[in-house]
Image (cartoon, rainbow, N blue to C red; front, side, top):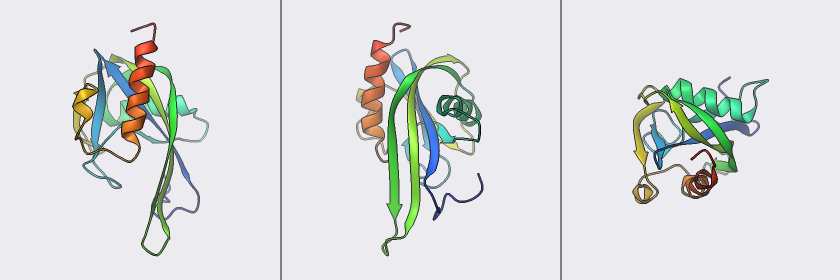
Length: 149
């Protein structure tokens, strides 16, 4: 990343992934701003020449050491955070995906300070990034329809 995440001159394209294993989804508490310490899906910025799905799976492995197989695209999430004076502090467009766990036990690291596998009921009350509750609701529905389940 070239450092333009804070006060960007354009929206930043990113991808994330809701990984399912035994009826639970993997969440990671962010280790860096924005939203440090708040639960989110593993993910990050899409690199040149990379599809959204490839980016989601690469970021998953880099951040928490897990490999997964994509089920499909859940939905885009657009996050815009402004300063009091109206300047755009963050503008992210995140393509959220759903996937099935394949291998690897999740590990914490610089980008994921805490990790947990949660059921749909466990999500209530967790501090989460903007828009994540709706994405998780859709991801659980998509995962339930997956014939590989």
